[in-house]
Image 1: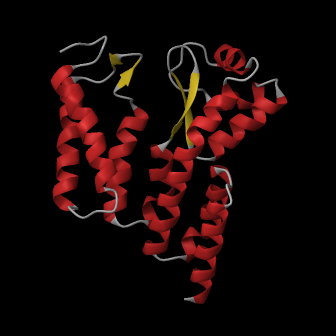
Image 2: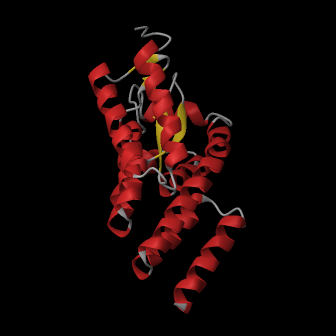
Length: 207
């Protein structure tokens, strides 16, 4: 289909031109309903790669000036920044930055008394699962578990060994079901992290 080919070409050019994740999200939201599962996978997985590239950039910007102080004053003691408080941010540049980050399907996670950007796989799953094949749906499901409840924060385990075991089993099932899956290496890397934690514990939560 020529129209789909043009859409994907345009999207690829946007991704290669260093567009921020929120611009890709806007494009996907407007066009994903007009493409097949194959193109939907391309869109979502390219978005994920761009999100990974921008994570450190956004983290650096969040640590500029007094940004962290203002964010902590608005969401003190909370694991995730309360998105309903974005409009209460007084610094116009910081408000614009947070809106871009959240619009790019991230969440802000409080780690060690500072907010860092993290890919929000729950939002990716909720927004795009209906357009994706089972393989990518299952991948987003696995990743969303960690996105919603990180397994370690500040060196301390935040999930039980039972929950960690269930995550390991889910990953093993995924690997068995999709031995040649496009996200196999990412899933195996995550499996290694979970298995190491299950066998050894963490710095502040030794086994």
